[in-house]
Image (cartoon, rainbow, N blue to C red; front, side, top):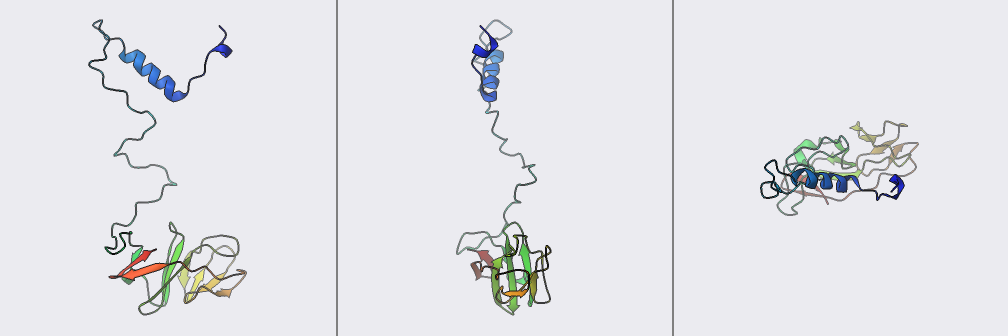
Length: 164
């Protein structure tokens, strides 16, 4: 029989077959199956192993709103009056144009899709080409952005801001 005529095994099937062969022969002549645990799924990560993938998002914030059950994006005290905070993982920017008034917008610039990176002097700023958006309504304050930032829905409750 030629090598081309042999069936191809997936890596998982080959590993499992190798495990059966290794555990199938005990040193004492027994079949070894009574003492050998079932083979572990070689493709499943350990339950307690932390992710080492740099593209993995960080764990969600520890706090959550009792009303919605969703994790809190931030505390209201974290958002400065007349300013805001960019949440890059969620691709959202939350502003507080006036005391107690919170707004949320997409953090994706409408010019070429870059993420805005800061809120300063009453504007949400994009580092790529200089577009600026007003913190009160997301409208364009300086181009080349062609459109305002789309609004995002948030819930403000018990001193927490929840993205809905």
